[in-house]
Every structure is written in C-alpha cells, then in structure tokens.
Length: 256
Image (cartoon, rainbow, N blue to C red; front, top):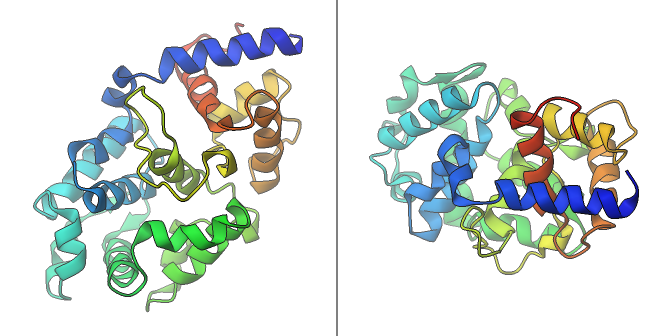
C-alpha cells in the first residue's frame, strides 16, 4: 500500500470498530457500567489490569470484582479496611491472585487519599511524555507495601515493557470523540501523547502494513508504531488502535 491507501485503510477500520457495538465484547464495558468519574477510573483501571487472555474470561472476572465491591468501586477503595480486603481471598485471574488484588486496592487507596487520584498520578509525567508518566506512576503505585511477586502485574516501560494494559487504560480515560467508546474524562492530558496499546493483534497487523519493523512487542516497538501512526493523525494517533485491533481480531488474517 502507498500512504494514501494506508490512510484509507486505517480510517475505514477505525470507523468500523470505534462504535458503541464494540463495547459489548470488550473489557471497556466494565467502566461503562458507571457514571461517576472515580467509579469509571477505578473500574477501568482494574479491568485493564487483568486484561490478558480470553476476553470473555476477562469480562467475567472483572464483573466479579465489581460485585465484590458492591458495584461501588470508588467508595470501596476509599473506605476499605484490611479486613474488608479479605473479600478478595477467593479471587484469581490467571497469575493475578488475591494477594495482588489486595495490594492493588491498597495502592489505589493511597493514590486517592494522598495523591489526588488516578488522573493526578499520571498528569505530571505527561507534561514530558507517556514513558515518563508510566514510569512515575509505577514508582508511586509500588510505594505501598507489597510482595515483590505483585510488581509483574504493573508494567514498567523503563524495563522495556510494552505496557499494553496501562496504555489501553489511558486510551479509555483520555481519548475524546463522539463515538461513545472511549470516555475522554481526563482533560489535562493530551491524546496526542498517548501510545498504542501494543499486543499480538496490533503488532501483527502493524507489521503487515509496514507500520512496525521491530520483531519484539516491547516499548521500543510501541514507540516505533506510534510514531508511524502520528504520520496519519498527529492529534489523535491512537484512534487507529481500533483499526489495528479490530482488523486483527475480526478480519481474515493477511487479507487487505
């Protein structure tokens, strides 16, 4: 494809999948159950944090988490005691176990009680770039007492992680359009600075399209493919996540 054909492809499939029907089969449906800003943020963060594996399993387990918090995640996070955390003793999502969830809740409590909430936790770093924001968030999140085993569940781009789940969460919170999928809740972070939530699907299609040459799905690859997407829309490059992911999951492999 030449650049004009590639732009047409990206725009066509972004429009095809960036619509409310997308929500039904995606973990973003979890925060869409809520209307209060803090509920949306916390539900979105927790759903994104366990977003690996089969999507129906992710959605089922994320819904179970919301049920454990009486479908009031912000109230639970803000006010829970150590004894309240025992509700998660039976929770498990693949390698993400009860002790990890209890740590995540305690860290979120610290962020909301002492650091102005999740938006503030990312905002300062984004004045530089996404890598800085994610790195500083990682340091803040891990400042609460935890077992070292739990650190693997929060990506760190300083270790060259693609940070797919965090970048997906940030897309949900920051991107603003009229299509009804992403929330656009966070007004002080530019969507132009967002990075692609790179996974096996977006990576495969990105390479097929010539948007990505690096073979590993790591932070260097995220940087490369996001720079490629900015050539087509510098103000909202991550809208093309819908095109790459949607095509990769739903269309015939290799058919353009």
